[in-house]
Image (tube, rainbow, N blue to C red; front, top):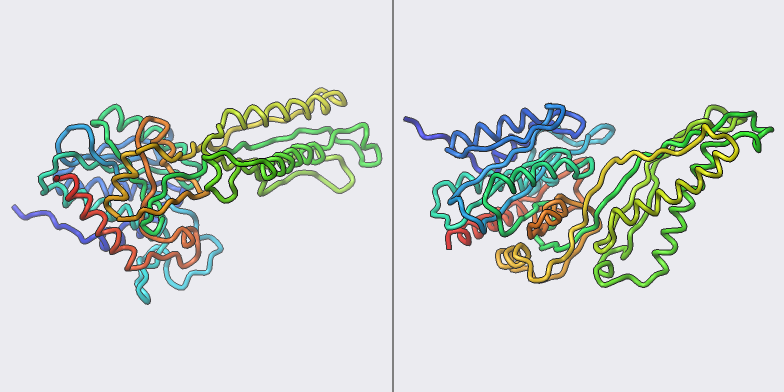
Length: 389
């Protein structure tokens, strides 16, 4: 019987980049490919389907069924290329000048390819502790979906001691990141001619009150002394943001509708519950004034995403492991979010450590340098040795 072909990590990356797994679309062709490739090497994987069935997470394990192993966590989805000026096909991995170009090459199919290659190599190694793979969908649209994957792995597999989330960090060990929280806001006003403005309710004007609340909270946070968990971040506070807004019918009519998304970047130590409560209290205050003019007006909040922050751990197993494998002893936190927080709030020790520069993420001509890819390969080689020790 012919042995299955073992692909180099770079060829795995080329295959992964070839799947246009933009978050708005299905990731199932990529999941099919990974599942078949692992199965060909005797590795059984498990899917966690999305509620609609058009996407799926995937997890797998190699090695003894004991606790204390390591999870390699990555996401399958990428951001769109619409409107971006690429020098080569974004869905074909292309090497130029020591760089591997392609959508997702850096964020984060490079790490996923290395993780898959490590799983296959681990199949033939005398592991004392297991290596687990966690491959998710919809990270780029809020990191909410991965919660189902984490819970499925916790229920089905021996408890891992460490989670390495391979977001691009230049192979530096990142022990903390901000969380995220977002709400779609719909403001319903009452239309009158603008000359009769006091008798109507402008959805845009009322939306502006809520946006001014965001400005005031940002100013207060900037003026306050940050706590020890927040101090390492830039900026060292939870910031509130509105990036897009739409509404109104004509310049001389008080707006009946206004819509926008309000989002929060949460420092460790702040809670989604606390900021949600503050937002809802302000919505209630503004809404009371609106309804005093016309009772059918109001403001609705619809959750869009909620991503827990990743807090530095006291003697965390994942941080200790990543530092041992990389030799990196620098202290690093980042303001972007990852799936690490979803693992941590469910009791896992987690850090971020992966190849590539986050500055390349989401950019036209996104790339991963060959040097960083090689550093990722060295990391995986050391990890397998560690699991065999």
